[in-house]
Every structure is written in C-alpha cells, then in structure tokens.
Length: 155
Image 1: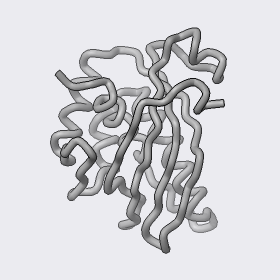
Image 2 (image 1 turned 180 degrees about the vertical axis):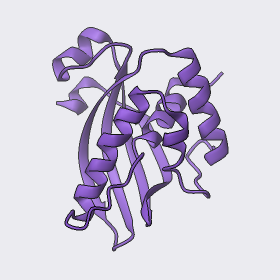
Image 3 (image 1 turned 45 degrees about the vertical axis):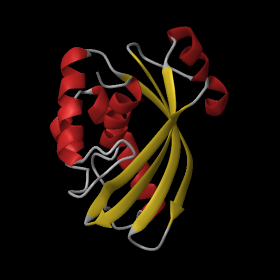
C-alpha cells in the first residue's frame, strides 16, 4: 500500500503543470505561476496534465520514476474525489539559468483550505518538499524529496 507521503508527492509533482514562459517574467515568477497552475490541475484531478511536467528521467527518494508516479496519480485521483491543497513556498533558489531548487510546504485535505487556521480544523496532512527543477523549454520536475511537517511549519 502506498503511503500518503508518496501520494502527496505525486500531487506535488503535478504542481509543476504549466511552466509559464511569458517573455517578461523572471524565472522565479515562472516557477511561482507554474506551481499555482499545478495546484489547480491537482485539484481538478488531471493526472495527464500533471505528468507532462515531470522530466523523463525523474527519480525520487522512494525510487519512483515518471511512469510509476503518473500511475500513482491516476490511482489516487480514482480513490479521492475531492482534493484541496494549501501551499506556502519557502524558497526558490536558482542554480543557474536552467536549474532551480524549490522548498515549500503543502497541506492537503478533502475540503477547501481557506487559510492556515483551517488546516488544523480539517486535519490536513502537511509535508515539507524539496523539488529540483530543470528548464527544458518549460520548467520540469527532475527530483523530489519530502518529509512530514506540522502546522507550525506553515505559519
């Protein structure tokens, strides 16, 4: 049985849905917009769109590759009809023009998470993620690692 962290990771990988390559946006702005679009795709349960944002040679801390991860997304979306995410980006570190490291926290629940105060009431699951991105036309997820977190991390 897959752990919730693995499933949540699959959703977070999807946060990297549509890299925004608008001419005037900085790389950090593109990454922020990508994360916002990915949240929308995850909440819409679109495993195909989320899978498009994962680099072909992706590998995570659990040893999952892109194909395995997109399969987990499909299974998770089949089992969960309501998915709501609340995110806080802690840091976007550019490692050159084509690489970035994103540190963020995410809370996930079956109901809308309007703000940090709602996280506790909904008993949302919270994780801390570190995502390595590579720009290959769009920003793509190359590697991910995560650990459980707490409400204090979101404040």
